[in-house]
Image 1: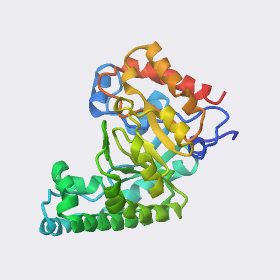
Image 2: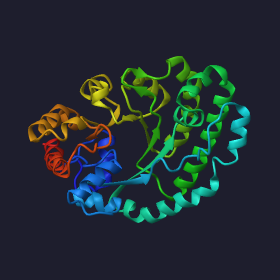
Image 3: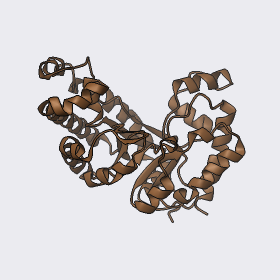
Image 4: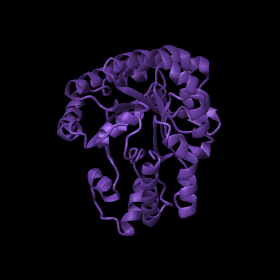
Amino acid sequence: MSENLTARERFLDVLDGKMPNDKIPMIETAIWWDQTLRRWESEGLPAGMTLEQSFQYFGLDEMHGITNYNTPAVPGRIKNDDDYERLKKDMYRDSEFEYYTNYINKLKPRHDNGEVVFSVGLFGFFWHPRSLFGIEPHFYAFYEYPELMHKINQDLLAFNIRLLKKIFKIDKPDFIVVSEDMSYNGGPMISKDFFDKFIMPYYLVLIEFVKKHGVKMIMDSDGDITAMIPWIQDAGIDGISPLERQAGVDIVKLREEYPELIMLGGYDKMAMNKGEDAIRAEFERILPLMRSGRYIPGPDHQTPPGVSLEDYKLYIKIFKEYCEKAVK
């Protein structure tokens, strides 16, 4: 067991499968919905707090990052190659990198002394083409425009690597999360064959680059991602979030099957407004995971507006208790 750890060291140890001596990280793995915050402000939460102030208010470890902002802007929808080439000049803008580098430079002193966890978010190779085509046309595009699908992901890959090169020159994030949302409550929205053909090649290049810098890669995908876990492991991805209980994801079973898999989230958010007994019962369910390493507990998606401020404070109180209980 490691002693006298900072919040960042504690977080990195757990990702590596080690257990701190005092508690496991108290991280909000999915930042609150704006509607949830508006409700809480009507119930007494100080209005207009920064993210840093919000973490401190609730007694959470701080996790900051450039998440889901550092992606190519999508100025419109496409139907074919000509549309993509027309819009491409307004995407993948390296001129915007200054915003991210300024943010990281400002955060770096606190990151260096271990006060905060720092992440980088990227759009992935399923998500980005979908945002260009739209949901239903995207599915047809695998058949109708396969070359264009590859061209889009080649451009996205090059953009992501250019951005990460800039970031790595300043600081090394504690992990990178790639937004995909490739599953729904019935399972994957893409076949294994199409994943291997259209998605896997780009992850292999991206992850080879990321791993040279010693950084772990997490995929964010809603829905039931159970069947996809061997796919993403073959691609070199280290972990998954947010592990939605309502979609049928069983994180206890996943740990038995995939002991090396990093998992973030997994706490059933539907228990958060049902009182102390329900909140405790859900923590008891995931306690074996909390003791297993490579697991950062948190709601299995953003805390919904049905959770009151008092509900959330009770959840936080019990959360702290179980983060300490997990190491005893």
